[in-house]
Image 1: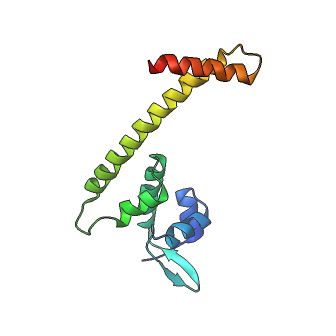
Image 2: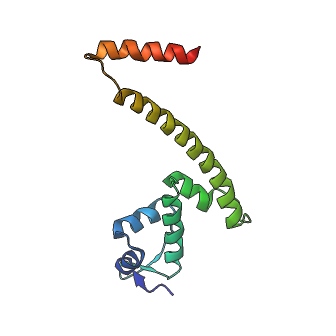
Length: 134
C-alpha cells in the first residue's frame, strides 16, 4: 500500500524531495501512484534509495546506476549485476589511483623547485623528463 508522502520518504532516506523526484524522472525509481495529486510511496522505495546511495558512495555515476537497475535482462540476479559493474569500476579506480600517484610525484618535484622564473622551471622539467625517458 502506497502510504508515504515524498516528504516522509525524503526524511527517512536523508534526502531532499527534489532528489527523489529526479531519481523517479530518470527511471531509477518506479513511477508511483498519486493520491490527491501527491506522490505516495510504498516502504520498499527506501530499499531502492539505499541501493542508489551505496552505488553513489562507491563512485558510480548516474548512468552506471541506471545500468545497474535497467541494463540487464530480467533474469539477471542482483549479485551478478554488482559483480560486473564493480569489476569495471575497480579497473577505473586502479587507473585513477595510478594517475593520482603520478600527479603526487610531479607535485613533490614542483614543491622542491628553486627556480626564479617559470622559463627555468620548464627547462628543469624538460631535463628531468628526458632523463626519465632514457
